[in-house]
Image 1 (cartoon, each protein chain N blue to C red):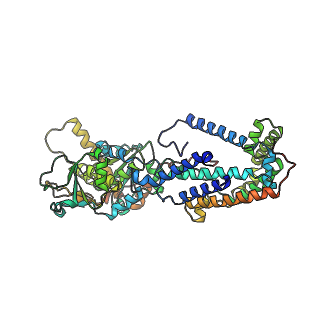
Image 2: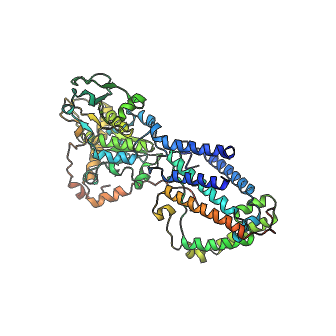
Amino acid sequence: MNFRTTFSIILIFLGILVALLPEQDNHAGHLKPRTLANFIGNTDMFITVDQVARMVLDEDSTMLLIDVRTPEAYRNMNIPGSVNIPLQQILNPDYEGYLNQPNTKNIFYSNGDMFALEAWMLATRVGYVNNFVMGGGLNEWYQTIMLSEFSGDQISPKENATFELRYKARKFFNQMNSLPDSLKTGFLLAKKSKERELVGGCE
Amino acid sequence: MVKKYGFLVAFILLVTLMVLLRPRLSTGYVMDATDILNQLNAEEIFVSMEALDPSGADALFVLNFTGTVASGLPEFQNTVFMDRDDIITRKVRNIVRDTGLVKVIVSDNLAEAIQSWMLIRQLGGRPLYILDKVNSLADSVWRDNEVLRYSFKPDSTVFKQGRNTP
Amino acid sequence: MGPILIHSDASTWINLLTGFLIGIGFGFALEQAGFSSSRKLAGMFYGYDTTVLKVFFTAAIVAMIGSQLLKFFGLIDMDLVFVNHYYPYAAITGGVIMGAGFVMGGFCPGTGISAFSIGKMDALVFLIGGFVGAFLFAETFPLIQKLYMAGYKGPVKLSESLGVSDGVFIFLVIIVALVMFWLAEKAEVKFKRPDITSEL
Protein backbone atom coordinates (compact mmCIF):
# COMPACT_ATOMS: atom_id res chain seq x y z
CA MET A 1 0.00 0.00 0.00
CA ASN A 2 1.52 3.24 -1.01
CA PHE A 3 1.39 6.41 0.95
CA ARG A 4 -1.65 7.81 -0.75
CA THR A 5 -3.82 4.83 0.00
CA THR A 6 -2.71 4.68 3.61
CA PHE A 7 -3.33 8.36 4.02
CA SER A 8 -6.79 8.12 2.50
CA ILE A 9 -7.75 5.18 4.65
CA ILE A 10 -6.58 6.93 7.81
CA LEU A 11 -8.47 10.09 6.92
CA ILE A 12 -11.68 8.28 6.12
CA PHE A 13 -11.42 6.32 9.33
CA LEU A 14 -11.00 9.50 11.34
CA GLY A 15 -13.86 11.07 9.46
CA ILE A 16 -16.18 8.21 10.34
CA LEU A 17 -15.05 8.38 13.94
CA VAL A 18 -15.80 12.07 14.16
CA ALA A 19 -19.12 11.70 12.34
CA LEU A 20 -20.22 9.07 14.83
CA LEU A 21 -19.36 11.04 17.95
CA PRO A 22 -22.48 11.40 20.02
CA GLU A 23 -24.23 14.72 20.13
CA GLN A 24 -23.69 16.21 23.49
CA ASP A 25 -23.82 19.60 25.06
CA ASN A 26 -20.69 21.64 25.08
CA HIS A 27 -19.40 20.65 28.49
CA ALA A 28 -16.18 22.59 28.52
CA GLY A 29 -15.91 24.55 31.72
CA HIS A 30 -18.36 22.35 33.57
CA LEU A 31 -17.32 21.44 37.07
CA LYS A 32 -16.17 17.91 37.71
CA PRO A 33 -18.37 15.77 39.96
CA ARG A 34 -15.75 15.76 42.69
CA THR A 35 -15.68 19.55 42.78
CA LEU A 36 -19.46 19.70 42.79
CA ALA A 37 -19.60 17.15 45.61
CA ASN A 38 -17.52 19.46 47.78
CA PHE A 39 -20.33 21.97 47.81
CA ILE A 40 -22.79 19.59 49.39
CA GLY A 41 -23.49 20.48 52.96
CA ASN A 42 -21.47 23.67 52.65
CA THR A 43 -23.59 26.47 53.99
CA ASP A 44 -21.53 29.34 52.57
CA MET A 45 -23.87 29.59 49.64
CA PHE A 46 -26.84 30.68 51.73
CA ILE A 47 -27.69 34.31 52.18
CA THR A 48 -30.20 35.36 54.81
CA VAL A 49 -33.26 37.40 53.98
CA ASP A 50 -31.94 40.24 56.12
CA GLN A 51 -28.81 40.43 54.00
CA VAL A 52 -30.93 40.41 50.87
CA ALA A 53 -33.15 43.13 52.27
CA ARG A 54 -30.14 45.28 52.96
CA MET A 55 -28.78 44.74 49.47
CA VAL A 56 -32.15 45.55 47.92
CA LEU A 57 -32.50 48.78 49.89
CA ASP A 58 -28.93 49.83 49.13
CA GLU A 59 -29.49 49.07 45.43
CA ASP A 60 -26.33 47.00 45.59
CA SER A 61 -25.10 46.58 42.07
CA THR A 62 -22.76 43.69 42.82
CA MET A 63 -25.65 41.31 43.21
CA LEU A 64 -28.35 40.05 40.91
CA LEU A 65 -31.50 38.63 42.44
CA ILE A 66 -32.96 35.89 40.30
CA ASP A 67 -36.51 34.69 40.75
CA VAL A 68 -36.73 31.13 39.46
CA ARG A 69 -40.48 30.78 39.68
CA THR A 70 -42.93 30.95 36.82
CA PRO A 71 -43.61 34.31 35.14
CA GLU A 72 -47.13 34.37 36.57
CA ALA A 73 -45.89 34.01 40.11
CA TYR A 74 -43.27 36.65 39.41
CA ARG A 75 -45.81 39.13 38.08
CA ASN A 76 -48.01 38.53 41.05
CA MET A 77 -45.35 39.41 43.57
CA ASN A 78 -41.58 39.49 43.64
CA ILE A 79 -38.69 41.02 45.52
CA PRO A 80 -38.09 44.43 43.94
CA GLY A 81 -35.01 44.55 41.77
CA SER A 82 -35.05 40.88 40.87
CA VAL A 83 -35.15 39.43 37.39
CA ASN A 84 -37.23 36.46 36.42
CA ILE A 85 -35.43 33.46 34.95
CA PRO A 86 -37.80 30.50 35.30
CA LEU A 87 -36.06 27.33 36.40
CA GLN A 88 -36.73 25.62 33.10
CA GLN A 89 -34.97 28.45 31.25
CA ILE A 90 -31.94 28.64 33.44
CA LEU A 91 -29.68 27.09 30.79
CA ASN A 92 -31.17 29.10 27.93
CA PRO A 93 -28.31 30.90 26.14
CA ASP A 94 -30.39 34.09 26.11
CA TYR A 95 -30.01 34.36 29.85
CA GLU A 96 -26.35 33.57 29.93
CA GLY A 97 -25.59 37.27 29.90
CA TYR A 98 -27.25 37.62 33.28
CA LEU A 99 -25.70 34.59 34.91
CA ASN A 100 -22.23 34.19 33.45
CA GLN A 101 -20.71 37.27 35.08
CA PRO A 102 -17.57 36.96 37.17
CA ASN A 103 -18.16 40.08 39.22
CA THR A 104 -21.78 39.93 40.31
CA LYS A 105 -23.32 37.56 42.79
CA ASN A 106 -26.17 35.48 41.43
CA ILE A 107 -28.68 35.10 44.24
CA PHE A 108 -31.41 32.60 43.43
CA TYR A 109 -34.70 32.57 45.26
CA SER A 110 -38.07 30.89 44.97
CA ASN A 111 -40.98 30.24 47.27
CA GLY A 112 -38.96 27.84 49.38
CA ASP A 113 -35.51 26.35 49.02
CA MET A 114 -35.98 23.58 46.53
CA PHE A 115 -36.16 25.32 43.16
CA ALA A 116 -33.53 27.82 44.14
CA LEU A 117 -31.19 25.00 45.14
CA GLU A 118 -31.82 23.19 41.88
CA ALA A 119 -31.07 26.36 39.96
CA TRP A 120 -27.96 26.84 42.06
CA MET A 121 -26.73 23.32 41.32
CA LEU A 122 -27.24 23.76 37.60
CA ALA A 123 -25.58 27.16 37.48
CA THR A 124 -22.63 25.84 39.46
CA ARG A 125 -22.30 22.74 37.35
CA VAL A 126 -22.04 24.66 34.08
CA GLY A 127 -19.29 26.78 35.53
CA TYR A 128 -20.93 30.05 36.50
CA VAL A 129 -19.34 31.55 39.57
CA ASN A 130 -20.59 33.39 42.62
CA ASN A 131 -23.90 31.61 43.00
CA PHE A 132 -25.95 31.92 46.16
CA VAL A 133 -29.35 30.94 47.47
CA MET A 134 -31.60 33.07 49.63
CA GLY A 135 -32.23 30.75 52.53
CA GLY A 136 -35.89 29.96 53.06
CA GLY A 137 -37.11 31.78 49.98
CA LEU A 138 -40.19 33.94 49.93
CA ASN A 139 -41.74 32.01 52.78
CA GLU A 140 -38.85 33.07 54.97
CA TRP A 141 -39.04 36.61 53.59
CA TYR A 142 -42.64 36.85 54.62
CA GLN A 143 -41.98 35.34 58.00
CA THR A 144 -39.05 37.60 58.80
CA ILE A 145 -39.61 40.81 56.95
CA MET A 146 -43.29 41.23 56.37
CA LEU A 147 -44.59 39.85 59.59
CA SER A 148 -41.84 40.93 61.90
CA GLU A 149 -42.95 42.52 65.10
CA PHE A 150 -41.14 43.56 68.11
CA SER A 151 -42.37 42.38 71.45
CA GLY A 152 -40.83 43.11 74.78
CA ASP A 153 -39.95 46.16 76.83
CA GLN A 154 -36.48 47.03 75.87
CA ILE A 155 -34.72 46.96 72.60
CA SER A 156 -30.98 46.82 72.02
CA PRO A 157 -29.40 48.98 69.31
CA LYS A 158 -28.64 45.96 67.21
CA GLU A 159 -32.20 44.73 67.37
CA ASN A 160 -33.38 48.22 66.63
CA ALA A 161 -31.27 48.34 63.50
CA THR A 162 -32.62 44.98 62.38
CA PHE A 163 -36.21 46.00 62.84
CA GLU A 164 -35.61 49.31 61.14
CA LEU A 165 -34.19 47.47 58.15
CA ARG A 166 -37.08 45.07 58.04
CA TYR A 167 -39.61 47.82 58.28
CA LYS A 168 -38.05 49.73 55.41
CA ALA A 169 -37.84 46.58 53.34
CA ARG A 170 -41.46 45.84 54.02
CA LYS A 171 -42.51 49.27 52.92
CA PHE A 172 -40.42 49.10 49.78
CA PHE A 173 -41.77 45.66 48.96
CA ASN A 174 -45.35 46.81 49.39
CA GLN A 175 -44.81 49.90 47.29
CA MET A 176 -43.11 48.18 44.39
CA ASN A 177 -45.46 45.25 44.24
CA SER A 178 -48.53 47.46 44.44
CA LEU A 179 -47.62 49.40 41.35
CA PRO A 180 -49.79 48.73 38.32
CA ASP A 181 -48.16 46.40 35.85
CA SER A 182 -47.15 49.05 33.33
CA LEU A 183 -44.96 50.90 35.79
CA LYS A 184 -43.51 47.69 37.17
CA THR A 185 -42.10 46.48 33.87
CA GLY A 186 -40.26 49.71 33.26
CA PHE A 187 -38.45 49.41 36.52
CA LEU A 188 -37.56 45.78 36.00
CA LEU A 189 -36.25 46.00 32.46
CA ALA A 190 -33.85 48.75 33.38
CA LYS A 191 -31.80 46.35 35.43
CA LYS A 192 -30.43 44.11 32.71
CA SER A 193 -26.68 43.88 33.04
CA LYS A 194 -24.25 44.04 30.20
CA GLU A 195 -23.86 40.75 28.45
CA ARG A 196 -20.51 39.17 28.05
CA GLU A 197 -19.39 39.69 24.50
CA LEU A 198 -17.56 37.29 22.30
CA VAL A 199 -14.18 38.76 21.57
CA GLY A 200 -12.45 37.91 18.36
CA GLY A 201 -12.26 38.24 14.64
CA CYS A 202 -12.45 41.39 12.67
CA GLU A 203 -15.73 42.72 13.98
CA MET B 1 5.26 0.88 5.80
CA VAL B 2 4.55 -0.11 9.35
CA LYS B 3 7.86 1.27 10.49
CA LYS B 4 7.32 4.60 8.85
CA TYR B 5 3.75 5.19 9.84
CA GLY B 6 3.71 3.05 12.94
CA PHE B 7 3.56 5.97 15.29
CA LEU B 8 0.81 7.69 13.42
CA VAL B 9 -1.33 4.59 13.26
CA ALA B 10 -0.71 3.83 16.93
CA PHE B 11 -1.69 7.36 17.88
CA ILE B 12 -4.89 7.18 15.92
CA LEU B 13 -5.77 3.83 17.43
CA LEU B 14 -5.16 5.28 20.87
CA VAL B 15 -7.45 8.19 20.15
CA THR B 16 -10.13 5.81 18.91
CA LEU B 17 -9.80 3.72 22.04
CA MET B 18 -10.16 6.77 24.23
CA VAL B 19 -13.25 7.86 22.38
CA LEU B 20 -14.89 4.46 22.64
CA LEU B 21 -14.02 3.80 26.26
CA ARG B 22 -14.71 7.25 27.57
CA PRO B 23 -18.26 6.65 28.80
CA ARG B 24 -17.29 3.48 30.58
CA LEU B 25 -14.17 4.74 32.26
CA SER B 26 -15.32 8.17 33.19
CA THR B 27 -16.26 9.09 36.68
CA GLY B 28 -18.05 11.96 35.14
CA TYR B 29 -21.59 12.83 34.37
CA VAL B 30 -23.90 10.56 32.52
CA MET B 31 -26.40 13.31 31.83
CA ASP B 32 -25.94 16.67 30.21
CA ALA B 33 -27.01 19.73 32.12
CA THR B 34 -30.06 20.20 29.92
CA ASP B 35 -31.02 16.56 30.43
CA ILE B 36 -31.08 16.82 34.20
CA LEU B 37 -33.06 20.04 33.92
CA ASN B 38 -35.73 18.26 31.91
CA GLN B 39 -35.76 15.40 34.39
CA LEU B 40 -36.54 17.72 37.28
CA ASN B 41 -40.05 18.20 36.01
CA ALA B 42 -40.59 14.65 34.93
CA GLU B 43 -39.61 12.83 38.07
CA GLU B 44 -41.03 12.48 41.51
CA ILE B 45 -38.25 13.32 43.92
CA PHE B 46 -39.76 12.78 47.32
CA VAL B 47 -41.03 9.56 48.77
CA SER B 48 -42.77 9.20 52.07
CA MET B 49 -41.97 6.73 54.78
CA GLU B 50 -45.11 4.72 54.15
CA ALA B 51 -44.16 4.02 50.58
CA LEU B 52 -40.91 2.38 51.63
CA ASP B 53 -40.92 -1.33 52.27
CA PRO B 54 -38.10 -2.55 54.47
CA SER B 55 -39.05 -6.15 54.01
CA GLY B 56 -38.35 -5.97 50.31
CA ALA B 57 -34.86 -5.16 51.47
CA ASP B 58 -33.12 -6.18 48.32
CA ALA B 59 -34.77 -3.47 46.35
CA LEU B 60 -34.06 -0.59 48.66
CA PHE B 61 -30.80 1.04 49.30
CA VAL B 62 -30.74 3.83 51.80
CA LEU B 63 -27.95 6.34 51.46
CA ASN B 64 -27.98 7.83 54.89
CA PHE B 65 -26.32 11.18 55.24
CA THR B 66 -27.28 11.80 58.82
CA GLY B 67 -24.67 9.41 60.16
CA THR B 68 -26.91 7.63 62.58
CA VAL B 69 -30.00 5.63 62.07
CA ALA B 70 -32.75 8.20 62.24
CA SER B 71 -35.31 7.61 64.88
CA GLY B 72 -38.54 6.31 63.58
CA LEU B 73 -36.86 4.81 60.56
CA PRO B 74 -37.24 1.06 60.41
CA GLU B 75 -34.09 -0.93 59.99
CA PHE B 76 -33.26 -1.38 56.37
CA GLN B 77 -30.97 -4.17 55.38
CA ASN B 78 -29.01 -2.28 52.79
CA THR B 79 -28.04 0.96 54.45
CA VAL B 80 -24.95 2.86 53.50
CA PHE B 81 -23.78 5.68 55.71
CA MET B 82 -22.00 8.25 53.67
CA ASP B 83 -20.98 11.82 53.53
CA ARG B 84 -20.41 13.90 50.48
CA ASP B 85 -16.92 12.63 49.75
CA ASP B 86 -18.22 9.12 49.43
CA ILE B 87 -20.52 9.88 46.54
CA ILE B 88 -17.78 9.54 43.99
CA THR B 89 -16.09 6.46 45.36
CA ARG B 90 -16.20 3.38 43.20
CA LYS B 91 -18.23 1.38 45.71
CA VAL B 92 -21.02 3.89 45.88
CA ARG B 93 -20.83 4.48 42.16
CA ASN B 94 -21.52 0.83 41.48
CA ILE B 95 -24.49 0.91 43.80
CA VAL B 96 -25.74 4.07 42.27
CA ARG B 97 -25.60 2.84 38.71
CA ASP B 98 -27.48 -0.37 39.46
CA THR B 99 -30.92 0.41 38.15
CA GLY B 100 -32.46 -2.56 39.90
CA LEU B 101 -31.94 -1.04 43.32
CA VAL B 102 -34.24 1.66 44.54
CA LYS B 103 -32.10 4.25 46.21
CA VAL B 104 -33.38 6.59 48.89
CA ILE B 105 -31.47 9.49 50.33
CA VAL B 106 -32.06 10.07 54.00
CA SER B 107 -30.89 13.36 55.39
CA ASP B 108 -32.02 15.87 57.93
CA ASN B 109 -31.08 18.86 55.83
CA LEU B 110 -33.08 19.76 52.73
CA ALA B 111 -30.17 21.52 51.04
CA GLU B 112 -27.89 18.54 51.48
CA ALA B 113 -30.60 16.17 50.27
CA ILE B 114 -31.44 18.16 47.16
CA GLN B 115 -27.81 18.70 46.22
CA SER B 116 -27.00 15.05 46.69
CA TRP B 117 -30.04 14.02 44.71
CA MET B 118 -29.00 16.18 41.81
CA LEU B 119 -25.40 15.05 41.87
CA ILE B 120 -26.17 11.35 42.15
CA ARG B 121 -28.83 11.64 39.47
CA GLN B 122 -26.36 13.23 37.11
CA LEU B 123 -23.92 10.43 37.78
CA GLY B 124 -26.52 8.00 36.51
CA GLY B 125 -28.29 6.95 39.67
CA ARG B 126 -31.90 5.95 39.18
CA PRO B 127 -34.44 5.30 40.54
CA LEU B 128 -33.52 7.81 43.19
CA TYR B 129 -35.67 9.45 45.85
CA ILE B 130 -35.40 11.59 48.92
CA LEU B 131 -37.12 10.47 52.08
CA ASP B 132 -39.58 13.18 52.93
CA LYS B 133 -39.06 14.90 56.23
CA VAL B 134 -41.89 15.44 58.58
CA ASN B 135 -41.42 18.52 60.67
CA SER B 136 -42.86 17.98 64.09
CA LEU B 137 -43.68 21.65 64.61
CA ALA B 138 -45.86 22.44 61.67
CA ASP B 139 -47.03 19.66 59.44
CA SER B 140 -45.02 20.99 56.55
CA VAL B 141 -43.14 18.44 54.61
CA TRP B 142 -40.33 18.90 52.15
CA ARG B 143 -42.64 17.99 49.34
CA ASP B 144 -44.53 21.20 49.97
CA ASN B 145 -41.43 23.29 50.34
CA GLU B 146 -42.28 25.32 47.26
CA VAL B 147 -45.81 26.15 48.26
CA LEU B 148 -46.15 29.81 49.06
CA ARG B 149 -47.63 30.06 52.52
CA TYR B 150 -48.62 33.70 52.37
CA SER B 151 -50.57 35.75 49.93
CA PHE B 152 -49.78 39.26 48.92
CA LYS B 153 -52.49 41.88 48.86
CA PRO B 154 -51.50 44.89 46.79
CA ASP B 155 -51.88 48.15 48.58
CA SER B 156 -54.11 50.20 46.34
CA THR B 157 -53.25 53.43 48.10
CA VAL B 158 -49.71 53.32 46.81
CA PHE B 159 -50.46 54.52 43.33
CA LYS B 160 -52.73 57.24 44.55
CA GLN B 161 -49.91 58.74 46.59
CA GLY B 162 -48.66 60.28 43.45
CA ARG B 163 -45.80 60.23 41.05
CA ASN B 164 -43.13 60.47 43.71
CA THR B 165 -43.05 56.72 44.20
CA PRO B 166 -39.77 55.32 42.89
CA MET C 1 -6.24 31.13 24.01
CA GLY C 2 -9.89 31.64 24.76
CA PRO C 3 -11.30 28.31 23.70
CA ILE C 4 -8.64 26.18 25.35
CA LEU C 5 -7.36 27.88 28.47
CA ILE C 6 -10.71 28.27 30.04
CA HIS C 7 -9.79 26.75 33.33
CA SER C 8 -7.05 29.16 34.19
CA ASP C 9 -7.24 32.86 33.69
CA ALA C 10 -4.07 33.31 31.74
CA SER C 11 -2.95 36.88 31.75
CA THR C 12 -2.96 38.95 28.61
CA TRP C 13 0.73 38.66 27.96
CA ILE C 14 0.60 34.88 27.97
CA ASN C 15 -2.16 35.02 25.39
CA LEU C 16 -0.09 37.33 23.23
CA LEU C 17 3.01 35.21 23.68
CA THR C 18 1.10 32.12 22.63
CA GLY C 19 -0.16 33.95 19.58
CA PHE C 20 3.39 34.98 18.77
CA LEU C 21 4.69 31.44 19.07
CA ILE C 22 1.86 30.06 16.97
CA GLY C 23 2.63 32.67 14.36
CA ILE C 24 6.25 31.63 14.27
CA GLY C 25 5.16 28.05 13.84
CA PHE C 26 2.81 29.01 11.03
CA GLY C 27 5.48 30.94 9.16
CA PHE C 28 7.90 28.07 9.61
CA ALA C 29 5.37 25.59 8.27
CA LEU C 30 4.60 27.77 5.24
CA GLU C 31 8.25 28.22 4.40
CA GLN C 32 9.22 24.61 4.75
CA ALA C 33 6.25 23.55 2.65
CA GLY C 34 7.81 25.62 -0.09
CA PHE C 35 5.31 28.40 -0.21
CA SER C 36 7.94 31.05 -0.54
CA SER C 37 8.17 30.06 -4.16
CA SER C 38 5.81 32.07 -6.30
CA ARG C 39 6.04 29.41 -8.97
CA LYS C 40 4.55 26.88 -6.58
CA LEU C 41 1.77 29.20 -5.61
CA ALA C 42 0.86 30.21 -9.14
CA GLY C 43 1.07 26.56 -10.12
CA MET C 44 -2.24 26.01 -8.33
CA PHE C 45 -3.95 28.13 -10.94
CA TYR C 46 -2.18 26.68 -13.96
CA GLY C 47 -2.41 23.18 -12.68
CA TYR C 48 1.18 22.00 -12.69
CA ASP C 49 1.71 22.17 -8.94
CA THR C 50 -1.12 21.49 -6.55
CA THR C 51 0.79 21.59 -3.29
CA VAL C 52 -1.26 24.52 -2.02
CA LEU C 53 -4.46 22.56 -2.28
CA LYS C 54 -3.08 19.57 -0.43
CA VAL C 55 -1.43 21.52 2.34
CA PHE C 56 -4.35 23.75 3.11
CA PHE C 57 -6.95 21.03 2.90
CA THR C 58 -4.88 18.80 5.15
CA ALA C 59 -4.46 21.63 7.62
CA ALA C 60 -8.20 22.29 7.63
CA ILE C 61 -9.00 18.62 8.15
CA VAL C 62 -6.52 18.25 11.01
CA ALA C 63 -7.95 21.35 12.66
CA MET C 64 -11.53 20.17 12.26
CA ILE C 65 -10.92 16.66 13.55
CA GLY C 66 -8.76 17.92 16.39
CA SER C 67 -11.28 20.47 17.56
CA GLN C 68 -14.14 17.98 17.43
CA LEU C 69 -12.18 15.45 19.48
CA LEU C 70 -11.13 18.08 21.99
CA LYS C 71 -14.73 19.20 22.27
CA PHE C 72 -15.76 15.61 22.92
CA PHE C 73 -13.30 15.36 25.78
CA GLY C 74 -14.44 18.69 27.15
CA LEU C 75 -11.11 20.45 26.70
CA ILE C 76 -12.23 23.14 24.33
CA ASP C 77 -15.21 25.47 24.48
CA MET C 78 -16.52 25.61 20.95
CA ASP C 79 -18.88 28.44 21.79
CA LEU C 80 -15.86 30.69 22.15
CA VAL C 81 -14.55 29.96 18.67
CA PHE C 82 -15.16 32.93 16.42
CA VAL C 83 -17.28 32.28 13.35
CA ASN C 84 -16.76 34.69 10.48
CA HIS C 85 -19.68 36.87 9.52
CA TYR C 86 -21.01 36.22 6.08
CA TYR C 87 -21.43 39.05 3.57
CA PRO C 88 -22.05 37.27 0.24
CA TYR C 89 -21.50 40.06 -2.30
CA ALA C 90 -18.48 41.45 -0.54
CA ALA C 91 -17.00 37.96 -0.25
CA ILE C 92 -17.40 37.23 -3.94
CA THR C 93 -16.06 40.58 -5.08
CA GLY C 94 -13.14 40.43 -2.72
CA GLY C 95 -12.43 36.85 -3.67
CA VAL C 96 -12.27 37.67 -7.39
CA ILE C 97 -9.93 40.60 -6.80
CA MET C 98 -7.73 38.61 -4.48
CA GLY C 99 -7.65 35.65 -6.82
CA ALA C 100 -6.51 37.80 -9.71
CA GLY C 101 -3.85 39.37 -7.54
CA PHE C 102 -2.71 35.96 -6.31
CA VAL C 103 -2.14 34.59 -9.77
CA MET C 104 -0.54 37.70 -11.15
CA GLY C 105 1.69 38.34 -8.17
CA GLY C 106 2.33 34.75 -7.26
CA PHE C 107 1.82 35.43 -3.55
CA CYS C 108 -0.93 35.87 -1.06
CA PRO C 109 -0.41 38.04 2.03
CA GLY C 110 0.78 35.30 4.38
CA THR C 111 3.10 33.63 1.91
CA GLY C 112 4.26 37.06 0.76
CA ILE C 113 5.58 37.73 4.22
CA SER C 114 7.25 34.35 4.46
CA ALA C 115 8.87 34.94 1.04
CA PHE C 116 9.97 38.39 2.07
CA SER C 117 11.54 36.89 5.16
CA ILE C 118 13.91 34.87 2.97
CA GLY C 119 14.86 37.96 1.06
CA LYS C 120 12.81 38.04 -2.09
CA MET C 121 12.40 41.48 -3.52
CA ASP C 122 9.27 40.70 -5.49
CA ALA C 123 7.63 39.72 -2.24
CA LEU C 124 8.52 43.13 -0.84
CA VAL C 125 6.93 44.85 -3.79
CA PHE C 126 3.91 42.61 -3.44
CA LEU C 127 3.51 43.56 0.20
CA ILE C 128 3.85 47.25 -0.59
CA GLY C 129 1.13 46.77 -3.16
CA GLY C 130 -0.97 45.14 -0.47
CA PHE C 131 -0.59 48.13 1.82
CA VAL C 132 -1.45 50.50 -1.01
CA GLY C 133 -4.56 48.47 -1.66
CA ALA C 134 -5.58 48.61 1.99
CA PHE C 135 -5.00 52.35 2.03
CA LEU C 136 -7.14 52.82 -1.07
CA PHE C 137 -9.85 50.68 0.50
CA ALA C 138 -9.93 52.85 3.59
CA GLU C 139 -9.98 56.07 1.59
CA THR C 140 -12.74 54.97 -0.74
CA PHE C 141 -14.75 53.19 1.93
CA PRO C 142 -17.77 55.52 1.85
CA LEU C 143 -18.21 54.70 -1.83
CA ILE C 144 -18.08 50.95 -1.43
CA GLN C 145 -19.77 50.73 1.93
CA LYS C 146 -23.04 49.66 0.40
CA LEU C 147 -21.49 46.70 -1.35
CA TYR C 148 -19.46 45.89 1.72
CA MET C 149 -22.51 45.55 3.95
CA ALA C 150 -24.94 44.08 1.47
CA GLY C 151 -26.77 40.85 2.16
CA TYR C 152 -25.49 40.36 5.68
CA LYS C 153 -26.28 36.90 6.94
CA GLY C 154 -24.52 36.80 10.27
CA PRO C 155 -22.09 34.16 11.50
CA VAL C 156 -23.21 31.15 9.49
CA LYS C 157 -21.56 27.76 9.71
CA LEU C 158 -21.64 25.61 6.61
CA SER C 159 -22.83 22.59 8.62
CA GLU C 160 -25.76 24.64 9.91
CA SER C 161 -26.85 25.77 6.47
CA LEU C 162 -26.64 22.23 5.12
CA GLY C 163 -28.56 20.96 8.11
CA VAL C 164 -26.06 18.30 9.17
CA SER C 165 -24.13 17.95 12.37
CA ASP C 166 -20.53 19.10 12.58
CA GLY C 167 -19.17 15.56 12.61
CA VAL C 168 -21.04 14.51 9.49
CA PHE C 169 -19.94 17.70 7.77
CA ILE C 170 -16.31 16.92 8.55
CA PHE C 171 -16.72 13.49 7.03
CA LEU C 172 -18.14 15.09 3.87
CA VAL C 173 -15.23 17.50 3.73
CA ILE C 174 -12.80 14.61 4.00
CA ILE C 175 -14.48 12.80 1.12
CA VAL C 176 -14.43 15.96 -0.99
CA ALA C 177 -10.81 16.56 -0.09
CA LEU C 178 -9.73 13.07 -1.09
CA VAL C 179 -11.55 13.39 -4.40
CA MET C 180 -9.88 16.72 -5.02
CA PHE C 181 -6.45 15.31 -4.15
CA TRP C 182 -6.99 12.58 -6.68
CA LEU C 183 -8.08 15.08 -9.35
CA ALA C 184 -5.12 17.27 -8.47
CA GLU C 185 -2.73 14.40 -9.09
CA LYS C 186 -4.29 13.89 -12.48
CA ALA C 187 -4.07 17.58 -13.28
CA GLU C 188 -0.41 17.66 -12.38
CA VAL C 189 0.26 15.01 -14.93
CA LYS C 190 -1.80 16.74 -17.57
CA PHE C 191 -0.56 20.29 -17.14
CA LYS C 192 3.02 19.37 -16.52
CA ARG C 193 5.59 22.04 -17.27
CA PRO C 194 9.06 20.62 -17.20
CA ASP C 195 10.62 24.00 -17.85
CA ILE C 196 9.52 25.34 -14.51
CA THR C 197 11.76 24.08 -11.82
CA SER C 198 10.54 23.67 -8.31
CA GLU C 199 13.60 25.50 -7.10
CA LEU C 200 13.10 28.94 -5.65
